[in-house]
Length: 151
Image 1 (cartoon, one colour):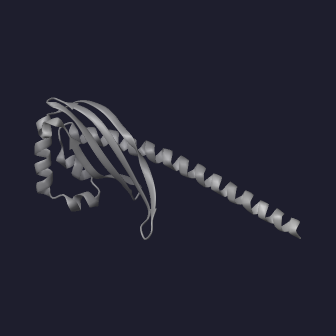
Image 2 (tube, helix red, strand yellow; image 1 turned 60 degrees about the horizontal axis):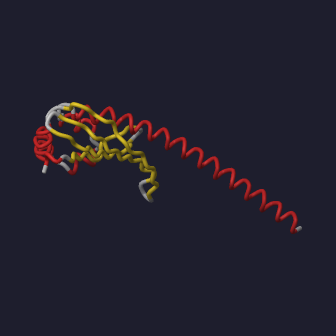
Image 3 (cartoon, rainbow, N blue to C red; image 1 turned 45 degrees about the vertical axis):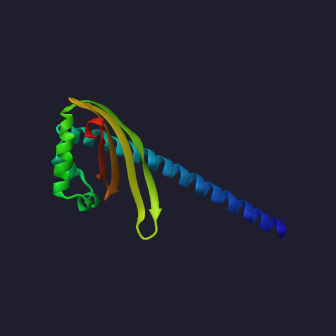
């Protein structure tokens, strides 16, 4: 009898290990896909915005949360300051990754954070980009430009 119980427990543990392994493999593959798609989005969108400092390009790619916290006047003021850097000369590409979180009441939330360095006609800048995946599409949740020219 004890032998049967131990065999049953052993089988249950093996099944749990197999399920955990499949889950880890699935999450790793999903994470790789999300990293690739978020990086491609960042590398497509950052130059679109900063090449000519297009406020419209940011607004068109913004998550609703970003549009709720920043007014049109805020965007106008920020982009007037960014324009001091001049047009884009060289973009080094974005570095970062995506993250998956499960929150009570909200479910799965997928975000990504990237940092890109770029050279402009009048200086250099670091662009910090926060992304949020909504309904299968990446949207910009945060956009910050850091440059010595801005201070």
